[in-house]
Amino acid sequence: MIEFDNASLIYQTGTKALDNVSFKIEKGEFVYLTGKSGAGKSSLMKLLMREENLTSGRIYVDSVEISSLTRNEIPYLRRSLGMVYQDFKLLRKLTVFENVAFAMQIVGASQKAIRHRVPIVLDQVGLSNKARSAIDNLSGGEQQRVSIARALVNKPTVILADEPTGNLDLLVAMEIMDTLESINRSGTTVLMATHAAEIVNSRPKRLLTIDDGQLVRDVEGGVYHLGD
Ligand code: ADP
Image (cartoon, rainbow, N blue to C red):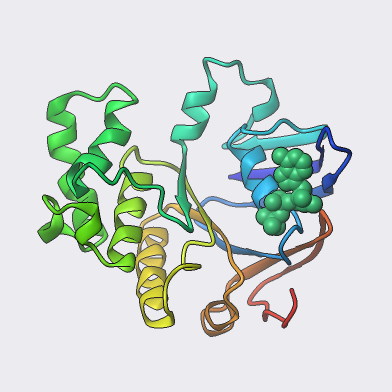
């Protein structure tokens, strides 16, 4: 569960990136977040990860008010939010298996747990046969699957995907959507920032639109309008 309650973020430069934003996402929802470049989508995700701090208001993740978390507690918040980026952010010198394993190593998982868990998530994203491959030998779609596996490996309650199909052609983007939807059906909440009208309009879901830091639309099965 995610809740923004009158959340505002003003950067030190004076830019108001979020302006009194309130919404609630229940466990198991799949929600699109749209808005023009500069509208505040990335800022919203950074606030959720505690990479930025609210200027006013409150944000709850799984009923915990995140601005009160201590430095030691923030890694637990980040573990519950699996992040997927447009540019994948993979470690190019490591294999597929090692990239996913790394996310478990940094939270102190045992080798035994890693050997058990990594093949499960690689299977979930359809990459069982690529475990030993180098990242550079994978297609863009396959690289995004590795990053989804990495986001899933520590069993987050939410996947935060920031333009996950932005670097992929439409056919591959649709396959990535199939994967995200199947992860969502198994219970993980998904919040996905996107500009892809073809995706939003062909797979209707709840749609949040922000404009100039304000939440201007929150509709079920919303259609993406050119320029949003
Ligand atoms: P989006 O992800 O929708 O493109 P952002 O959240 O990146 O939008 O940006 C929202 C606004 O905040 C923009 O005006 C942007 O220039 C500004 N902004 C983003 N990051 C920073 C920062 N670190 N410092 C100052 N201003 C920022």
